[in-house]
Image (cartoon, rainbow, N blue to C red):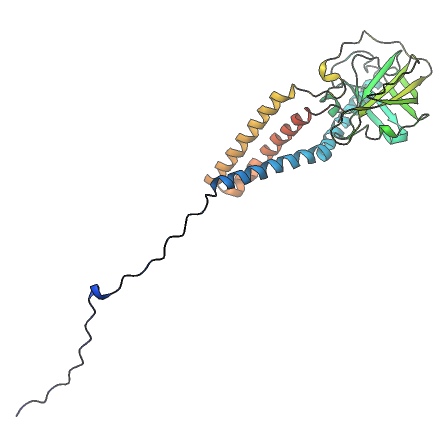
Length: 303
């Protein structure tokens, strides 16, 4: 007797030969577009330059006034003590030294300290006395420069003074009163035969000044004796002069700023980014301030 045949599962279909499978069709490579590396670098450079320029404008129109206010506060305290001790200068003194207090009520100028010198750096501290002229209250013509736009702009409204307005100046020799009697500009200098006068000078524009505004005032009363012989002026003391000596300092501070930024970028890659930037921020801010200050010294001194 024969055994019944066992049911066998159907045989699986044989796999097709590899040679029968069609090769996949790869898409053609996209044409190479223009390289963005140089364009990206150029865009970042332009953005950085624009940011630095806007920062400089903000420094001139805003932060420089805070800097001038700080200098004024310090200078006022110093001059107040010297006036009390009768040691305030009545003759030639060092650049930037406080030597007088100026009041012009008609334009809201009160208790403003006048410093010695009219270079751009001197006028960052407040109105400046031109070193080759007598001090206010002494026989002769005393000349004061002041900025029209930046660093507190103490003489911004000088052109609004009218004949008859009063100007008071306090020095180590007392308080002297002047009365405005004439005006002029760079093309029309003041001509006044009065022997004892005060001339105030500033720039003629809120933009970069190309000429000057002049206001003349006569001394009311008798002058006090003049001090020692006045020193000669330098090129940076003249009106609309730029302090070319600030250029080397500007280059050095700019280099230091660049190195600080590079160091901060390297530290951010190798260290914790936020911590690196927080540590670098005060250094970069201080260097940037020095760059802006030296750049401002290259502008006309009465700007």
